[in-house]
Length: 313
Image (cartoon, rainbow, N blue to C red; front, side):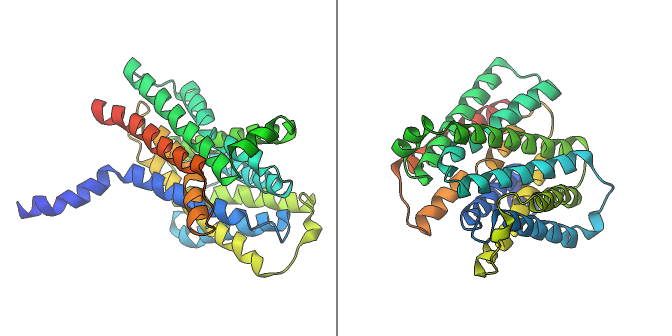
């Protein structure tokens, strides 16, 4: 009986390691997104090179014994990740972040569509309803959070009719976010690459793209300033590495194509706005009713999706 008691905590965490990985991914990406807000003073292109240079360096150090042959899916994942950061930083410099933020959460929808089209999983009617309703409720919550951390819904809605470029940029960001999530899943679940091994090639792709952006002078690379603000992309590189590794580990624990776990993990990986909300509140003392109402909707939607998971497993 004593040994059974000692095994209970271990089994509890083992059974839930997929969701723990998703939470860690959300926190990691949230910290990266929070630091991204301060990473443009040294120039967009240089900040991007520093960010992914750190992520690649950490990957090479940590994943020494897991090195493998180049992976096409991992490289595509890295390129998508690099494009997301370039577009987000560009929107920040162009004062369009308030329009782009609400679209980040829609990456989960693109992932879901790509996943269903590629794997063609078979779900019961009940499971389809729970997945759709839970996902839409959670995404609605993230949209409210994005309004809250961007200055309020009235300001954001007022800007939508005046800046179609910002809206178009947001849609492109959401597509790349969905592609990044989908190819991360393929790299881990289909290619069976260890998360640490895939990280090297993912960040090789991101770093090469960042160097190309620098050479093309995207974001006015001549604005480089050597200052203590460089600490923000340096720290951001570490946290984006944590987010990527945690996402890959979460997908690694998915048991079957017909599971719903991957949708919850994808949501966590694309739900960095939630930790950004709390960081903005506790660190910058920025408060909004929309943000915290959105947080309640996020948890409610995840509860709905998880409800069908526990009832049918």
